[in-house]
Image (tube, rainbow, N blue to C red; front, side, top):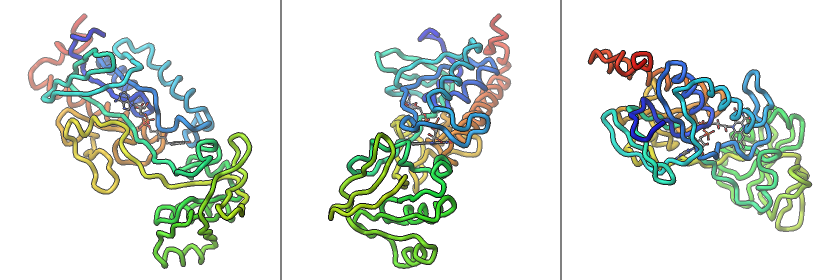
Length: 317
Ligand SMILES: Cc1cc2nc3c(=O)[nH]c(=O)nc-3n(C[C@H](O)[C@H](O)[C@H](O)COP(=O)(O)OP(=O)(O)OC[C@H]3O[C@@H](n4cnc5c(N)ncnc54)[C@H](O)[C@@H]3O)c2cc1C
């Protein structure tokens, strides 16, 4: 695509949400470009679970198949580059990418994802994505009936510990020395058989990416096969903020209506950047819904001006 073309849609983010949107838009013969910086949220994970037909696939292979399936759609282009900023509005958005090229489109889809804030415990990175996880729906089944730990002791960690009892009866909450739970939350855990250890943690130990034990600062150890944690999160990209989109107060997600439209006309958001279930299949579905809404909005705008054929690929031939 040439930089002076006015495209239909710029999609920022080539994870499940962005690629799924591109597939729908390609099938509608919309001219769209997907920019992807190549850091999907689950890049540390070895296997993607819970996606019907793809359960257990590697996340990188999942995305490679997605990109490959876009190849027949000649109005879609994928670029492996970061979008530095986007300006404009009123049906003309211009994105500047790393290297300085600029691309313009009538609509913008932000499928830019989230970043998880990881525990600052020595050794954590060694196990992250294989035996240290944030999402029980994604990874707890692989650790069923194993001794599990949950890190920290705030309300979210306590909820996670209770939830993990669905997979294992041996769940221990390791507060790392900081008890941030109300007494009634602690009582609830006790009632349900979750033990609490409040000694400060020195490091995680194991072999390769297999966690074997938690070592405490007093020298004692706790044998565990996996640990879970409830991460803080923030937007991976500043673009929604730069464009003036509204955010949800409680979780910092880009605020969207039912049709994935943000508070800024012409700007849509999908996947983990917006609110919803944070799973790959949900992100792909949200990308599809956003593409549907964008295509409908383009069609309505063109129909009102009698320009549907003028703007369609079919009309240009
Ligand atoms: C360790 C881990 C394991 C997980 N396991 C599972 C699992 O087993 N099953 C499951 O269903 N879910 C799992 N998830 C959740 C899953 O990763 C997310 O639901 C999914 O990735 C969200 O898709 P997305 O398209 O919204 O965002 P992402 O996959 O994060 O993709 C966003 C993309 O946008 C790009 N981007 C951001 N800003 C820019 C920019 N300015 N310019 C260009 N590109 C940009 C990023 O680099 C990234 O490639 C896991 C998450 C983690 C952290």
